[in-house]
Image 1 (cartoon, rainbow, N blue to C red):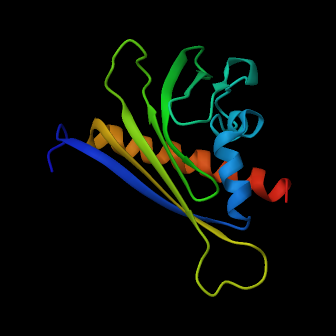
Image 2: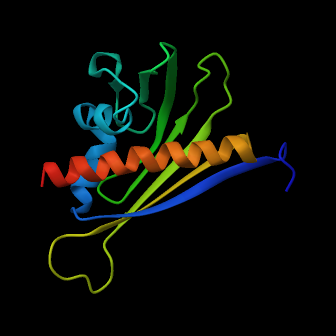
Image 3: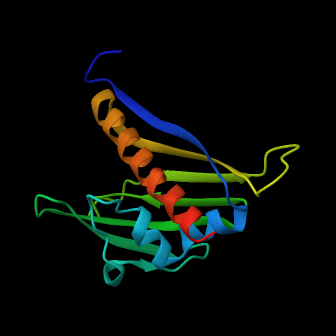
Length: 156
């Protein structure tokens, strides 16, 4: 594919040593979301985060970057089915009505024994990103989910 080709999305699969309820809570509880959505390098102050986690409810967050710039994220919840599924929209351009859609599926591995495990499949579609932008987005999400894993382990 050419460098300027536009993709329609990405999928990331992760496994967490935590029950689905805790992983779902990481997506829907402001005090947890503000930690992992920021990572160590980027700050999402809790006071900038608003989450009305219900179908039709909205969310917003302000991400403070190391260079002093800010990203204003907004979206709305399309589907809320704890602890297995969450669907929400996302954009960093609040004035534009176009939104990407994030679908989070949380499942327990078949035949899992021992500590609770959750397999998470996160798909983001409708992004209209180039290959290069998509690669950076994938790196960013994996950084977020590394922090989510630490958060879930610390609160286990």
